Length: 211
Image 1: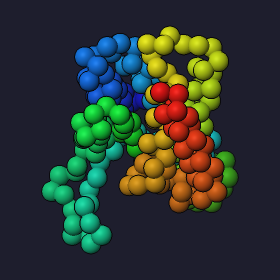
Image 2: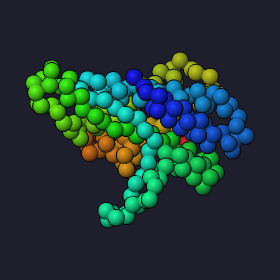
Image 3: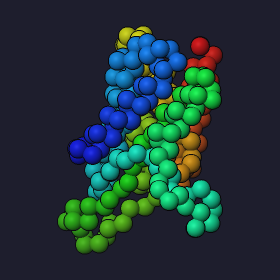
Image 4: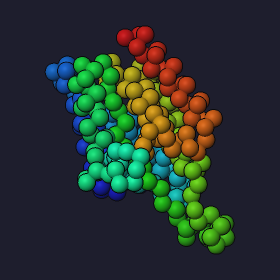
């Protein structure tokens, strides 16, 4: 389900995120953190791909990049700004490790017109709507929530910090900006976004209270 480019992007992003999460602790438990991040991302990605399959679409995973810096059409970067790599580093530096940005990947949706036409009639479902895109994004968030709950109850090694990392991942990906999952969910279904955003906010507050 993952092509080579997607796989390498996920690996590279996981390495960068693990670096920013452990650099101020002199890379303590780096292998465990890297493994935890990789699992969290893969669960999110595969949940989206499965949801996309049932909606007669395909999902392409890519690095989060920003192309514009203003509201006017000509306010564009000459080269895409790699926000998915820069934001984690900037947040780690300016928050002195207090906050770790973990939203680095986004997805594009392509419609499988031939499958839709075969199953539902020619051109009937040849376009993807914003609510469908929102459902695909939400599938990844729900999968991460379920993963965090399972990790909490089975008690994974403390070195992995699995539950906290999952909550960070969910929280930052729910921010409704640019191409992040939160923005796709908000435009697709505002009620669903409000529910997931509230849940992620409560979870992040709980994490800070425990810490």
